[in-house]
Length: 83
Image 1 (cartoon, rainbow, N blue to C red):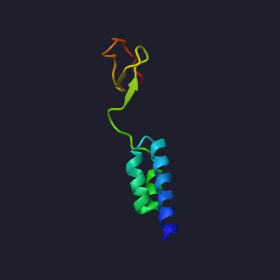
Image 2 (image 1 turned 45 degrees about the horizontal axis):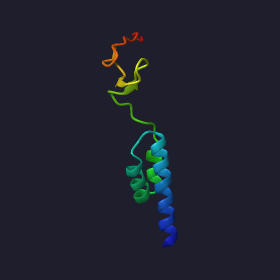
Image 3 (image 1 turned 180 degrees about the vertical axis):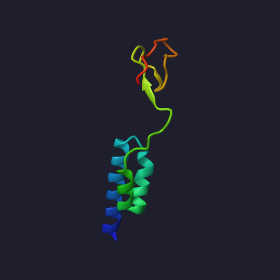
């Protein structure tokens, strides 16, 4: 019984580490790995989902702005269009 608990704990920790490295919620993936074991590892290792509304730092003032912004709202720096 102790071996099963230790194995589940290992799956939870490894799932959490994989999820954290991919920018996902590490606590949620720890719980998923703990409860569903190796399936949590497989799902946590999947590539991240591309989401709309990504953010980046402004090269002029380092404030966080939307990726598709053409001008920084803080320092008014204009960006070149990338085609």
